[in-house]
Length: 159
Image (cartoon, rainbow, N blue to C red; front, side, top):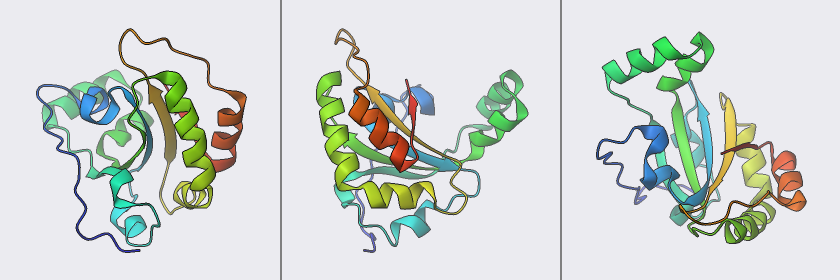
């Protein structure tokens, strides 16, 4: 399925950096695929993911001074990811951790083959699952079923 008219998330940062941008990583559950030479457009030209789950894709595009500041604070291998290309998929827009877990299990079951294809796509270096509840909501341990499904799909967990 070719996605040519995707409605992508507005990434106006409002002073937040990419990793703390609530429009991408606020209270919700997402899959984040990244790689320096990853071509998300090539993946999306062949994907079966519904356009509604595709939040954002492209190069991170941090301002040059931010890249320099970050590169000075992290190892060289990690610093190269500053210029990585990303694909962010919405798994759950719930702000409740237990609901995110339930919806993530359904999402991984339903899209297992496509997530594995993403994890094995050329130049993808990491594929992460991040479930983050709203402030004040209890943080729950990931259920064993979710851990197993994520492992089978080639995902790692981010906090």
